[in-house]
Length: 96
Image (cartoon, rainbow, N blue to C red):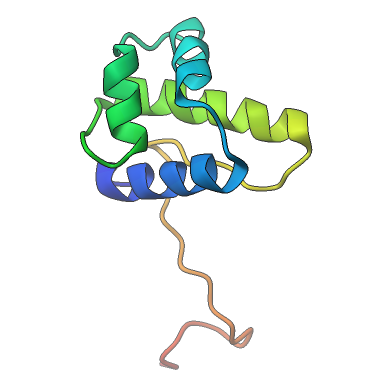
């Protein structure tokens, strides 16, 4: 997954669940990230990017909050494939 898609999807989960970027920063540090709190806030707001290590540590923190809250939304890791869902269960669109 590219960094722009990961940022957009992670940011959407953060917004949807009203997660606090300051708290996520602390979780990100505990999970091996080393970005500053301001860098995390800027990333969450879509104003700056982060290296994969920091994006993944933040995503893991977001996912732990989601799991604790029992919500299905999850932030992707940089190694996650970007999969497009199709409403047609017969296969990819357009049909081949």
